[in-house]
Image 1: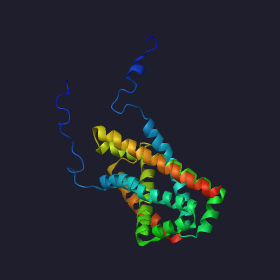
Image 2 (image 1 turned 180 degrees about the vertical axis):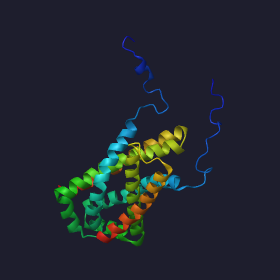
Image 3 (image 1 turned 90 degrees about the vertical axis):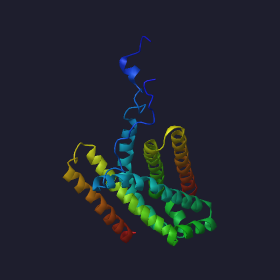
Image 4 (image 1 turned 120 degrees about the vertical axis):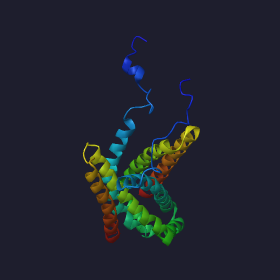
Amino acid sequence: MADVNRGKRPLSPHLTIYRPQLTSMTSIFTRITGNAMLLAALMIVWWLLAAATGPGYYDLARTVITSWFGSLIMILSLWALWYHFCAGLRHLYWDTGRGFEIKQAERLGIMVIAGSFILTVLTLILI
Amino acid sequence: MAFMTDRKRANGMGSAKEGTHHFWSMTVSSIALAILMPLFIFNFGPMLDESYADVQAHFARPYPAILTGLTLIVAFTHFKMGAQTMIEDYVKGGARKITIIAVSLLSYAAMATGLFALASIAL
C-alpha cells in the first residue's frame, strides 16, 4: 500500500524538543490535574458508600480521608480542581476566538496559576 | 444507493471517525461543572469530618442530594471523555481501545456506586 513507512514516520517537535514555556506548562497541567482528580473522586465515592453502609464502616472511611495522607490528597486535589476550573474557563474564552496573542495567552496563564492558589486558600479558610 | 449523497459518503471517514460531537459534549459538561463544582465543594467539603448522623441528615436533604447526584453524573462523564482524549494522544493500537474501554467502565462504575450510596442515604 501507499503507507509503507507506517509507524516510522518522523514526529513533529513536541514536549521533549521545545523549551518549557508558561503556555505549554499551563496547558499540560490542565491535563495532569484533570486526570489526577480521579483518585480523590474515587475516594469520595468510597466515602459515600461507607456512609451508606453503616456507622462502623463510615468511621473507617472518615479516619482514612481525614488522616494526614487523606488530607494531603484532598488538599492537592482541591488545588487541582481550582486549577482545572480556571484552565477550563480559559479554554471557554479561547473557544470564542479571543486571547491567542502571545502576551494575552501568557497573561491568561498567570491568571490561571494565581487563580488556582487564591481559590484554594480561600476554600480552605471558608470550609 | 439512491439516497447516498457526497456528504453521507464522507461522514465518519476522517481520522477522528466523527465530527465535533466530543468537543461539544466537553464544552457543555465543562460549563455545567463550572457551576456545579464551586457549589459542590462548599456543600460537600464541610461534611468530610462530620459524624455519621450529621452526614445522614445532610444528604437526606434535597439540595445536597440533588447537587451531589448531578456532580457525580456530570463529573464522571466529563472525566471519561477527557481521559479518552489523553489516552488517544499517548496510547497506540489495541492497547488504546482496551484502555479507553477500561476507563469508561471505571467511570460508569464509580458513577453508579456513588449514586447508589447517595440514594440509600437520602431515601
